[in-house]
Image (cartoon, rainbow, N blue to C red):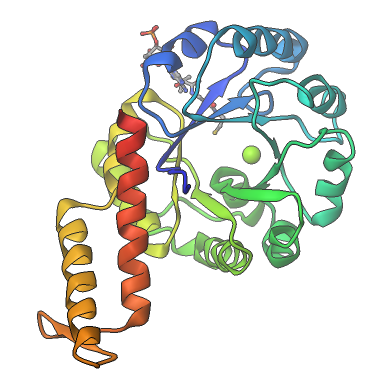
Length: 282
Ligand code: COA
Ligand code: MG
């Protein structure tokens, strides 16, 4: 069963109000954060707060991902060890992954949890394929703020400075069948800007977008869900192809465009995604 990742909300592990709030938010996934959203003096308390919330609150059916601190800090190993067997956490997200060795190190202490990789360093971009190929890897998360910082690139609405990195990670994720979600949009009150960036990521092939504020959830959910027009087209493509096949043809024509096997596969993926989203809403 495919799982949607349209909206992936960061929640600082130190913020009880936000952890409370998340119970009612229609997000597909949550990243419970111990890394950059938590100040150094709060790190240890946040680990305990999070362990308690995740034991008491059932955030399912949302995907529950824990972002640990890096293993080059005082907290990373203890974060991974504390949640390796915690039933409230489904996967561990590793920050600033530069190469597969960073995943090996976490895999050794993360029990049998699948791993996710923050893709946010120049080295990570260049090693994206080797990272995506890691047998424990389930998904990738673009860390566009850290990437822009390292590159020295400026914010542009069209994200031209980040395109090479976004493209490399997308290629790597798709080559190995991993989930990949886009970076955050910092101006969380700017709805038009978020919508444009979410649609850009969707058009590129990302599964969804990471978010920092509840006001962003609906826009991401809408952008990454198949529209009713897309669902209708998918159904008609499948019907047209089946009719053509019944006539002994390998190719159908619909609305002046050819429909081949590969289009039918895409149409089926659209319908499967729509079904998965509908199941979440029930
Ligand atoms: N997840 C869940 N709930 C959140 C939230 C989040 N990321 N961000 C805010 N909320 C909640 C607030 O707790 C508040 O709930 P309440 O009405 O029950 O008090 C409500 O949404 C409205 O919040 P608002 O007052 O508009 O925002 P804020 O000033 O409290 O917080 C930020 C603004 C940006 C500091 C906050 O959204 C945040 O910390 N985001 C996450 C940042 C992060 O994780 N960064 C690391 C990855 S880039
Ligand atoms: Mg980062």
